[in-house]
Image (cartoon, rainbow, N blue to C red):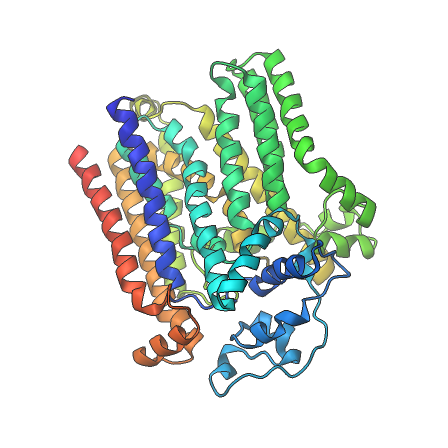
Length: 517
């Protein structure tokens, strides 16, 4: 192993370590069940442990044996609306007294809509933890497992950026900035199936990129298909990899990176590998619900008799602003979780202006003299194409999901974090655009984005979310009330130490990057 490879591997471990330390710090303040649909995801695992069978959407209910734990914790508005009938309280009323379970009325277990792999894998962990720990400790244990998986997921999903850039220093700074995304952290640091779906999606991306390398391309494509199937078996968001990888193989053939024969065999091997792991699930869903792909919105469309044309008929030019500019882009800066608290508009405006200025670098790439100079910073163009394809495929899926919501719920507002599987790829494209201005200005952009991400996360967490979660602006009361919702670790007392540790690791790496320049 040469020195350059060793330094790169060390950086990847540092990137994961910064993410994990930061994630643990955030958990010190993040209340249990604050994660979007978190109590529902926990209920699916609890149901598997209790009934020794998979819950079926439409039939399954939240286990009554979980009701006491649900009531014993405060809830965001959306969660409280679902659980208030059994005595659960929102943040606004929770601290006024001791919540008491008042009813055993059934609650629909709607998160049984998901593929089962995450819940089956976590069931033994949950069962063991509940036998030796309390409910809250179990929640944080499962969250911490997800944070570790997500740390390596972001490393894998940023691997194309490593292959795009010839300048290792620029890559390291860009990767630090992308990994600091506050929304990505909120998305994965809850009890849910997202982190592992992203983890295997990242592996699939790496394998797909390596098909153009030497040795057994069809085997690599087949394994990529298997891993894509595994990602989908965690969550259907992994489906965006299917068009992404297949089109990527075709483009590789067009630019003569692989032969046409290799392209055809690679596509077949990839799809066969995907079916190998996912076909039993798709077949069961089709037999049960009459469709190969199942989620709540699709089920509502089907029961309402809506066709694809009916859904696509909801397309409007104004969605460029309401769905893409707002939901998919600006709202991806930060929200608190299921409380959906936000930061002041100024933060989003700065974020939007900063990103637009960076994207404007595309026009600099069109200038021949600048393009010749900046091309030296590019090692390989193909990973950039893969990032662009993944971004477009996910944006398309995001919009289709918004149209389904419009058709059945008459709203287009959907959680912006649904875009997170492509967010590292999207940022990689933005970094490439910024490089059109030259490496120095791209370096400045990455630093500004890193500073914005870090400040937004701290402001949102400490100034917007924590006071709301504790229903107080008094610092001792905030720490006391949040501590009462946490186990011994992670707890508010460790927040500053852990976040400062993550910040020190990040600053140390930035200093080494500056020293290398």
